[in-house]
Length: 188
Image (cartoon, rainbow, N blue to C red):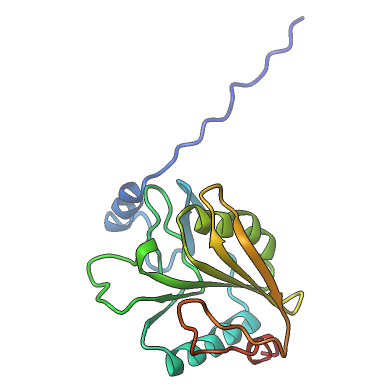
């Protein structure tokens, strides 16, 4: 008797337009914790207290020190099929009433990870590199460090990755007058 194999699983990929239509139609609401990553709807992990406090400390730091727009857990459009919601997006100053920031607007993206560091490293950071985001920070709360990714390559890698711990200030490439001591956020 021959073994019958099930048909291969086919996934439906969504475009940014599909995703926005689902929001407009009420299929997805503002309180749904999902983001569009390479055409797939991905459920976001819940935000714990340590994660929320770290984001708050980063917001205070950037709002005080930079003539930019600081967006907290807001979408960044990466056409044709991604709209992640990084924990912090430091973007150039302009109105975002009619569209979310795109790669050309981004000065720095920051992901804060209490339990999602692996996913951020393997999925989101390569996505940001493929779209030319100049700098991404991964605040890894479990390991007590900030990973700084710079020099994006189209293959989904960053040519430079530095690890900073408390006492090792970080100067954002596009905001060189600012210097963040990781201690400010890692000891949240």
